[in-house]
Image (cartoon, rainbow, N blue to C red):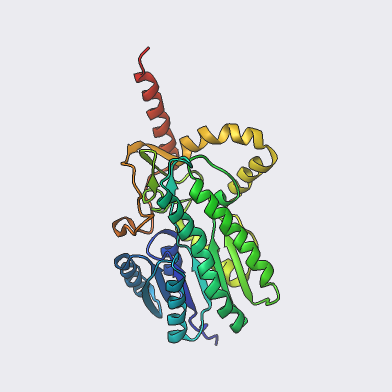
Length: 317
């Protein structure tokens, strides 16, 4: 007779939406203790309720901004006070801003870096010592394909994810002496989450996940597996490798093509939005959800091309 494994203690940041929410639900479904962290509490409570419904041993909510080092320290201390250990941390908190480098307001630009990059450093600063004391456990940093390439009108996000990529590599070098402490880094491409529609924008439009589009559930599954078993691969999806090859091996051609390809596949020209900070400066809980539901990628590309054709046709001769 086999016995079920003891419940793990899994801390998830960005747990109110997208990949973070999917990771929380996956851990909950196998009976783990889940600790859910994000800025807004209402959406976190919704995630906690869903986690209990699918079988979580416990589901706790802790409202905190990962860009605030003291707040992250309080979260880690509270988890240890209640559970004595942390088995896995999935750090999925992140925000996006669209616009040319010089057009993104300074406070929005800095806030993207604060949440995505400084937030990752803050989480590592307080989690890694716990894992080292325990001599086991995992930390997963959610990166992006964009942390390995360059794309137009996403400078804050690109810079932040290049930094997360570098941070993950540093942490792996520094912690390789403990074989049961796993530092994992997961770099998906387009994922069906609300992060695109929630983004800040200086373009009058917002983004959409570029094809091929993964589900947040798939990315969460990979993230948890890598955090528990160790790093095997950084990218999610073979298409990422193709894009990275073009960026590194054919930089001139890449630079020519990325503008029109990004505009057609990664922006939504069919829906005008007012310029603004989106959820970058503060949580917009009404937009938090597991999926982004922006429709099929190919349909989106065709819609963009149709919009472009109409704009050209409407120009005076």
